[in-house]
Length: 520
Image (cartoon, rainbow, N blue to C red; front, side, top):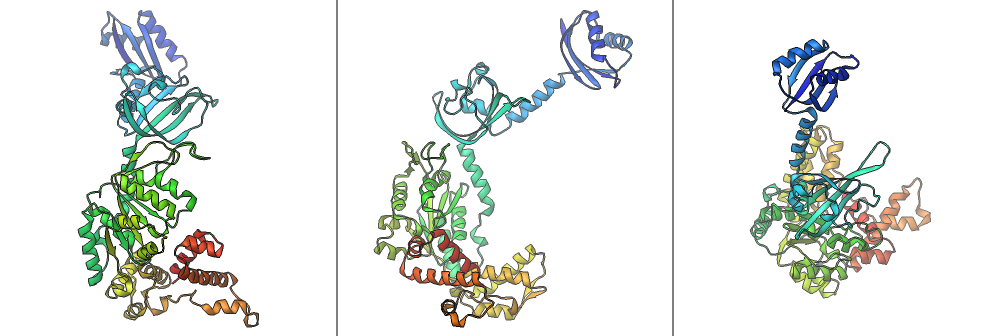
């Protein structure tokens, strides 16, 4: 018998049309395999013999007057939808496996087939023949899971994957199966690189015409092509991270990930896990494993900003990672190979810290293979006007003031200032000026006085006779707090030592220093 797939267009709102069509087909001894109803269409797949298509059309229209049109199909609508869905799913870069509530494989896409060596004969077999129960156990009730790390042998093939589990439930909320979505670790790294790449800059993007900055750019460009570790030295606000990004982009690792971490901004308790990652169950709350920054940076560069703030015990572990090119996660038993270039930066005098035994000498020499010194803004006075005009244009456009200019008097005033906060301070001054200015930025818009630069404030607060109300008590408290931090900085080497001496958290120390720099 021949099979045909037929779609009927019928009059709408006619009750019993499907039953009429079934009865008519049965009267001709046609075997009905499937029927799909999607008003005003009714589609059937039938087996018949001994009747021509044109003859059948005339007969069925005469038999059922409500049939308006008849079309022969290549495939049923459900088959077409399934085919289209299969094409879409197979084109996905993630591996997808659908299982029923018993854990038997109902569907998999081509990426999953490649990842796990799944073959057609594996359909309807249990998922745990491919994936261990500790990764997914169909007999255990779970919620949706995200970003589970899978690193195991599957059919004699080592896989390193990120797994997301989406449960399939019926209208009553009962689990009917699950969708397992896998992403290769290399794809995750490429995603990180794609996300970070828009923030990458080249050496051509670094602004400045002075000889000092040109010489620095020339040096950084020449050493970027080497594989040696680079240490960028310079005061806060000079643009050390910009140079790190340009060095990375100009290196052979430029298409790899660039992972930046501020060593002073991460709490002590989290530093090791952030750098090296951890395994599931390594500590309370570690319900899944996590990659560390060194793993994420593999194939690219890791930028360790404020390297001088690292605690001494972590310095030893980073030294080991550099020497052996491998790391071990917290709670882990295996070594993980890494391939990273380290670009570090600091405004501290690390050689003095080495002498004081607060920074490891061996790590210092490992990191400081090629030093790149960025000059402070006061040593590149020729660039102040260039940068001021650049920020005026950039920030003016963001503030919907594209025609905003800066006067010669304002530029002269900027040239006279010493800029202890360097380019970051200049940017903050220009941002405030753009807000207050209308047609042009003049001297009156340049708020560059240091509102914390007042030792007298501390004296006033302790001399009750001199207090004149009203006062801004929160600002006075901040000023006193900052003055104590400044005094402590002269005696202690790191924000953590300062915090201990003042009985406050090291993040508070960093926050107060940043507030001071932002308000200059």
